[in-house]
Length: 583
Image (cartoon, rainbow, N blue to C red):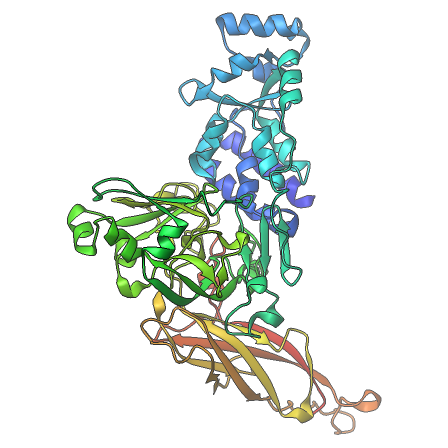
């Protein structure tokens, strides 16, 4: 709870500093939320609830007198007084549901209710990491949204922070009616269970990664071991009634395709592609300095054989080729998911036949599982995972990139290492992540493993990958923290074309253990110290690796120069400390 106390202090600081700190607080709240681990599955959503209060007063919560200063005048004020009958005694102003509904825009100020409380969130809107989605609750109750994102109710802290925005209470009759009508059902109740093989970060929404020890067991990740990154409840879509809409700039009209259309009208294409969450490896960033989001290890990355219709074939069937799109000014192709998640990719990728973008309906030879996008998902090889939109419902050709937090908000943008809030930053002007940098991970040995010095070598295994289809040309491994290097043998994946290597490459190396440093000698006897009754000394050995891609990009050694508050694009040298006994 200490982190939440800090969050409360941040909220009070924002009240004193005003709107300029709103966005920064959103980022800080999410970062602290992330520190609390799996209980808060999606720190961005936590930040959405914990924004700064809209009133300039200092202190933990506005007093009834402060709230009165924001009370409506005229008839509304009369209603409020009639409802309380005791404003002068220090009671909160009372507002009816109708009065709250009148405050649904910036001009009128944005009010919401939660249970029997009334809150003014106007200044918080600009800092909401979820973007304009917060306006869905303008002038209404937000209870259903908090039910949708259970991070808000996993702790008392979100409500405590929300209380700093209170301006009154809801009329008792309206509150009773809202309570009776409230949907208290669990929107996640119909989600498929997470595979017990996965390391679970959160069940609501589902966030789970492949355990490090299992990541490189097979080059193609079995469906039940494929990591899951969810934002919302998992849609349950009837394949028979499923429809995909294609519309937008440069198209003569709107088109609709069924699942059968995608299967039967277009040649079946297949691609083996690795999908990596933008935050894969974030826990290593957090070891240096806390970031925002799920503390993924190196298992938020998996590979499958995807089958489906080529995006280029579907767009061509709608009358839009690459040349047509360029002439019409199409710069982006947007993907919309059935669960309200949206993202986009550059037109140059979407219309490139060798870009291998698929509208996939099979994963490893089976219908795509629900958790992974059934019945159809976009597969965008070489691009960050969030662009591979699941439960695909619409494709939009556009002059602009997609709206929403996953494209234009802070979620998938890489900020400078010295930036700890986005206060004063034009977030929308920062490019969204598409292709990610070259990276690698060590999956064996594991941290803390103990080896016998008599073995002489340590076997190292792992994977390497680079965005944009850039193949891996070399992986170097060291058992002395990078003092000396040994070239690993590239295994599965190394046969891919260097300009079209959409999947990871596995590597192996037997690396000589460094020699035991000479034991210090006793000043009194001149004899070597150490060992003794307990035998030879144990020592720590640091295993590191670095990959180089086909463009001869290589991994940075240190975390500090690439740290960013969102904790994305981790690609510093992976480091594993083991113990060597004897020698």
